[in-house]
Length: 332
Ligand SMILES: Cc1ncc(COP(=O)(O)O)c(C=O)c1O
Image 1 (spheres, protein in one colour):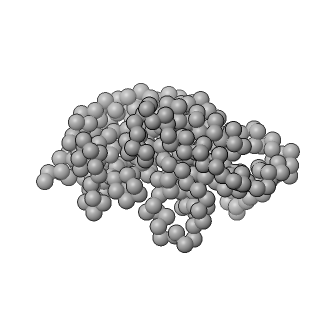
Image 2 (cartoon, helix red, strand yellow):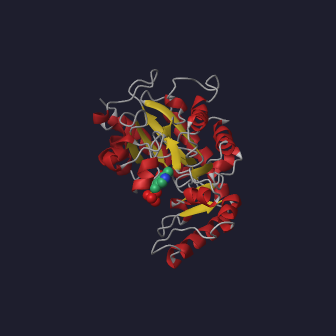
Image 3 (cartoon, helix red, strand yellow):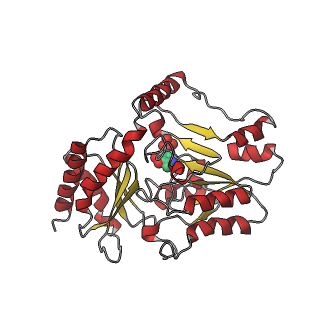
């Protein structure tokens, strides 16, 4: 709605579409499901969902174009440029993406050049760039926002989860000055409201969390803690059913494959991610199991998103729990 209003106020009334990527997840409301590309989560509601346009995901381990970086010339970024160039009339208001894809692709990090290319395509085509940092934001990848790794400034940044660290329900949209100015030169107000918006208790919890993050330099703890966790997990990488351990900072994904050389997934009915999750949970390690990273149905992975204060001992506990979960699940 904010992107649409921005264009309306500037007289660009034909722009309304929000383009997004297949294999994405942006939330549960109808609007969020329309821009999401997650097959399973959308399936029951398809009759309710309009089609606004989805481009290819950026996912090197299962490249949608079956290409390899850097020879691919980042074809997935080119897909956005083509979509925007070919759209007639020029009706795209914004492009929304998750800089590091959390739930649906298991912490898939874009290759160098991707984020800069899509930012440039958006700018050149008069389209707002929306970074969904609900999972990656507030320091999780080692910088305040994941887009900071690539030095770009989106027009809108969505934050949730870490913004109040779960102590209170809180989400926010961070708006670039150029968008604020566009609206303030027009009507001067964003036409949108909820009963509980600017809720004082949630806002107080968010402020307290931000103060604590800053005063304890918690963002600064992420990169060193991630290095320790990655080295603790390194011993798992040679496992014949671990396809890839990937991620950025303290947002990591582990993908399980039936055939490592061919990157071939297990059958969804094997429920591998769920089984690993259950075995790790029995040893006190909470993971986030998901299926569908390959094509919406096939592909098993778990996400790890531990606290920024993770210690070396706790990293070792995670590694041991996963090692024993793998041994139990793949015993046969
Ligand atoms: C990337 C991303 N965007 C949006 C959402 C939706 O957030 P909420 O459940 O707070 O609406 C989530 C939730 O997991 C998410 O991971």
